[in-house]
Amino acid sequence: PKVVQKLLQERLSERWGPKVVSRMGTGLKTTYLLQTDIQDFSVYYLGTTAAEIRLKLAFKLVDLRGRTVVAGQTFCVQE
Image (cartoon, rainbow, N blue to C red; front, top):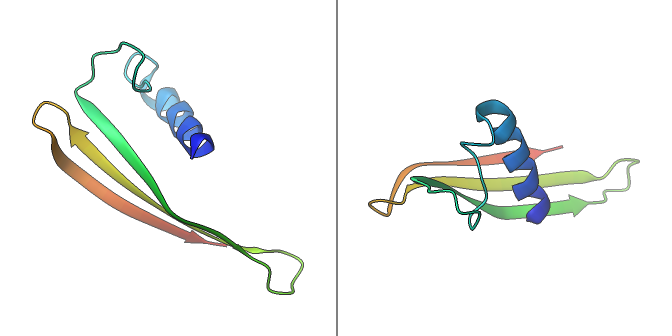
């Protein structure tokens, strides 16, 4: 989970800048929180040279003022 969180923070910071994107607990006054949930991370060895990987991530954007979920999306990848 920490690797995924770090990668997300890096990419979001590149897009919107470090003043807008931060981890919780850094003292930045936040309005929104992006919650992430790794629902599946599986590796299958099927007798071929490359393993099959399945990844399922769920995201929720939470408005901290009203403690409400304003958006959510789940992404699945299989390679």
